[in-house]
Image 1: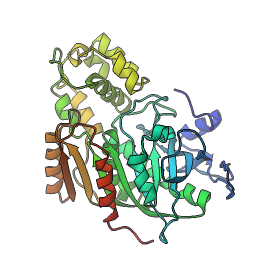
Image 2: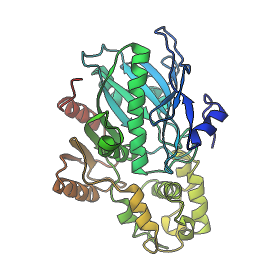
Image 3: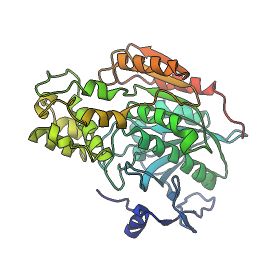
Image 4: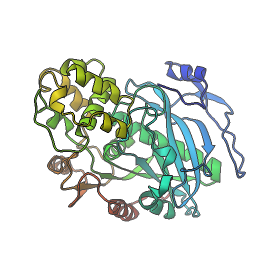
Length: 397
């Protein structure tokens, strides 16, 4: 898969080694147009900023309420544990920062595909798509760290729904935002952040909240606002077998193929192909590169039952899938707002309710709000999340 154009090839090679140094610091003057340039060598660590570029004036970059938009590349792990360059967009509010610094919203985007062309965060201003979703956060003084996931727009293949890795990618984007924001504005950010996202992003946001104390103890997760997160995927995948009846869910084969393509990356020890027909193997291989719209068109008219050669509940596939895609049911230091569509055909409401019941039994503070909606819960979910976040306990230093 193609590498990022701004990072020299030999630097990629260095990053992927077990002992590695990268050019970390950036020299930035507070002038209207800025591009970060390396200044000093330092050991590579997760969250290290490799490059930062002001893209405020680039078409499709700016969400309403942003005063400055910075494209960042930083180091974060992929599924094998090695650090790789990951991309993010940091949106800095136009409004003045409060005395304690800007709060941070760590945003994980939903399913867009696994390939290098499937990036989302570099064009969030396109046709005002995110203005009503993320604009209010900016206007309230939140820096938004909107990350890609390892393998999308960078080296390697994206391990779809590998929650541990996606959560770490989000946390490292917060680290990057805390470096970049003062460099471009002279204003610090709070160490406190809320992680948020819908669908795949909700799954990642939950993991980010869970991992904060162990992976990024210098940060404070104030809360998690997750919408329609897929939980207990392995449970319903265990029912898949040859000839399973078609499911009346739009793009269900696309989701199916992304889950298996991600599993192949996260667990190469499991022979996923042995569970698939020749057609199924091709569909899953294509899923590594085709973005959501194209994969949907490529699989139109197919059924999951046509793609499967043997029952998924035989052998190691389901245990491996569960180990990668599960969502922890305890160990959250902050409250969770979980918003769910009662009619969701992808992230099933009964599974979400079951997860919430288990989490609450483990002492997790979960506020579950269910709406008469499908998978695409409306913009009101983000409005609710912002109001909820404003009432949380934020650090004062």
